[in-house]
Structures are given as structure tokens and as C-alpha cells.
Length: 118
Image (cartoon, rainbow, N blue to C red; front, side):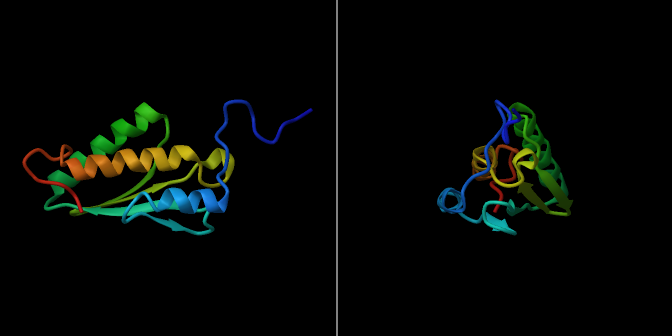
């Protein structure tokens, strides 16, 4: 008998659960259907070098979590979007990773001497 969700797979969050988790991530938004969309935020930086250091630090988080966001990189800005393709929407993993990225941006550790992202 085939199961809808394979063992160990991430489970898609209910709309109310996704909305509750979003409340703990200031500045983040859900694009598309609440539970089936993408968790997104744009971060801004003083210069291109700080932007790229942030991208590299986000990539390290993505590798540690084995969960890779879409990144849109421009001069002084990075758009970060998480979704869990395996479940067709948002999972706990998206919010956990977004929280780690938010902590990274607040710490300013991605850009030594450049200050925190906004």
C-alpha cells in the first residue's frame, strides 16, 4: 500500500500552523497560498561584497540543513525564498531555516565590519 508521505519526508503545514510560525519571523512573508506558497524575505546590504558574504553564509546553512532556498542576488540585496518541494508547500524545515537566516542577518557575522542586514 502506497503512503501519501514517505517515511522521513517533511509534512506540509496546515494554513493556521504556517501563519502562526510566520508571526515569529518579522519581515518575512508568504507568497502564494499560505501553506502551499513560499516563505520569502529580502535582505539589504551596504555593498556587493557584504551581499556575497551573506550568500555564502546562507549556502552554508542550506548545506547543514540539507534544505536549499532560492536566492535572488543583486547589488546590495538578496531575496531568500524557502519552500519544501517534496510536500508541495511549507514545512517546519522552511521556518527553521528562515529563522537561522534571520539570526545570521541580525548578527552581521556574514559581513565582518559591515554591520547587520536589514
